[in-house]
Structures are given as C-alpha cells and as structure tokens.
Image 1 (cartoon, rainbow, N blue to C red):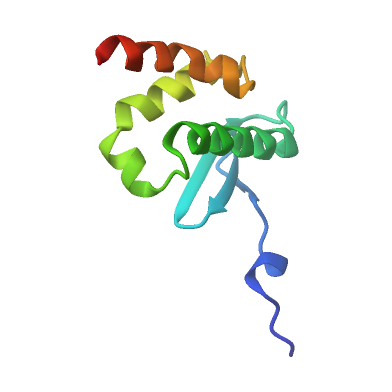
Image 2 (image 1 turned 180 degrees about the vertical axis):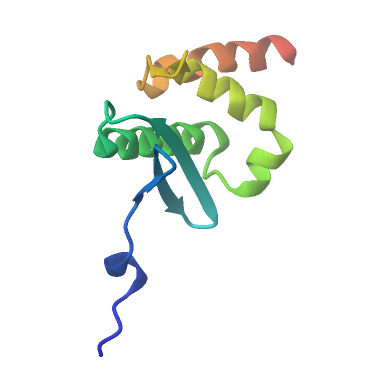
Length: 108
C-alpha cells in the first residue's frame, strides 16, 4: 500500500449531525466554519476562509496564533466587518480594514 501525502488524502469538508464542517489549515492555524443545511457551497466557504486569512495577514503582517491570541478583539472586529448575521457581506481587504485602521490612528 502506498502512503499518500496528507494534502492528497484529506478532505476539507465533513458532515456532522446535520452540519457541514469546512476547515482549512494555514501553517499552525486552523480555521473552521460550521454551516447549517445544504444551502451553502463548500468551495465558497473555503474561499471565504482564504479571504479572511489574507485580510488578517495584511493587518498583522504575516498572521500567527500569537497575533490572534493577544489581539482577539481586533481579529473579531475584522471578522465582524466581513460577516453579518451569518452572511458574508464584504471580502474586499481595503474596505474591511479601513475602520480598524481608523481606530488604530485615533487610539494613538
């Protein structure tokens, strides 16, 4: 039996108790999204996760777990700018980061 590299033998989608679980790993970070029902496209959720990570990367300059741990409120703020009531409302990095950058300037 041939062993496959992990990337080729794993799937980023699972169904669990009526939910779709979509995840993606970036270095030491795991991003996990749970979706109800069959209305959501798994690939669109993966693309959203990628967009979120790119936005976090731009803000934190190469995001890592310590950035998120010590700046959890900022990470939540960025996520809140992208998602409202469970719907993706914005994926443009410049638009997402504009409010938090204004807060950073006002705060000193």
